[in-house]
Image (cartoon, rainbow, N blue to C red; front, side, top):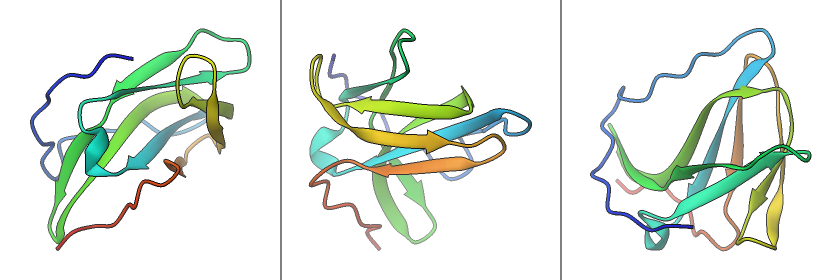
Length: 109
């Protein structure tokens, strides 16, 4: 997983296309993971990744990785190449949420 520096994502800058059998996933992390690429996979399918970014909202900010346009199903969130951090179910038309272990997630305000 590669670490890169990304600027903050402002309110309303992430668009999610939800409906039918398509959903989305948000992985909440602490700020210490800013720029880290977190991988997910569904079954034996190829992994996909998204970068952790600061998300600024009206009442403060938080850090997360966002995965839009996911087919409904059970996804593994990967800690590293060999170790899963956990599983989460994505439902069509919905947004699934996963708290990265020991993320200390909170919206700062």
